Image 1 (cartoon, rainbow, N blue to C red):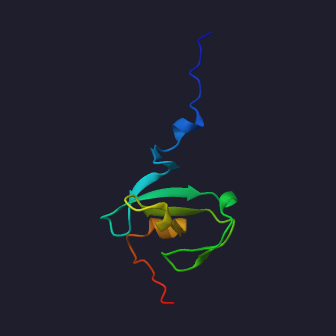
Image 2 (cartoon, rainbow, N blue to C red):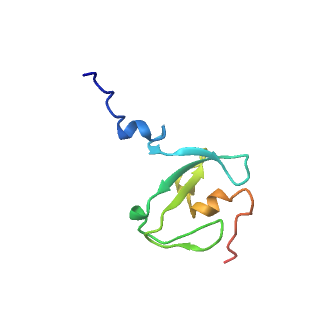
Image 3 (cartoon, rainbow, N blue to C red):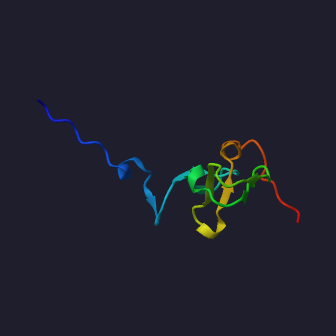
Length: 98
């Protein structure tokens, strides 16, 4: 009986490491900048965040996206709803006035 190829490890299925963080790179809302993007599953979302795309809260337990500029730092990361991140090119980022 022929041998089967061993299954790929979970490490092989992830995106390439970016520094000490796993993520992927995508263009940002203004298309000129590159962002590092991570998907956060609902089970790991334990705090309330405010989405810069719609200015609504992302409650605990809701899967969402975390993005920050590739040339910036993790201190500049923002939490987005999946739909807001996907539609980032068709609308402007909401700015809170207070």
